[in-house]
Image (cartoon, rainbow, N blue to C red; front, side, top):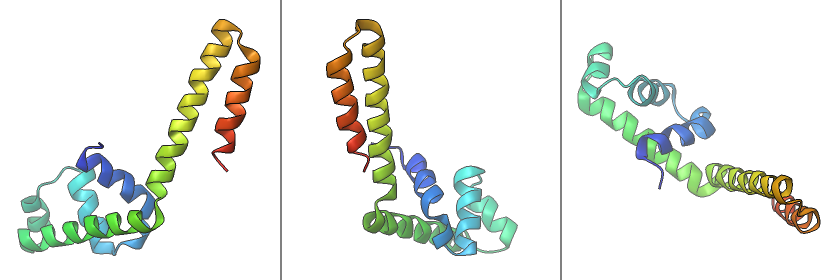
Length: 113
């Protein structure tokens, strides 16, 4: 399972344009710049609770978008396929098992469609 912060950043990369400017700003300060809720609140002269609510709302929206669109899931599936291809290429190089490896590569590439 992906760590919560890492998952947020990955989802943010896919869906950030669907968030409000405030949600993006607070999320970037909190997750990417590693500022605390208090530091963000002080910078914007609002309460910690208000900052927390913006960030929490952003997290919930990102998860909702992922549930519907599954862009991160598809990205991870493709990354796995490419890792599998890389492993097969290593086998091909080391053992010269060309025919069976080529068939397996084609099968993996078809999964990308």
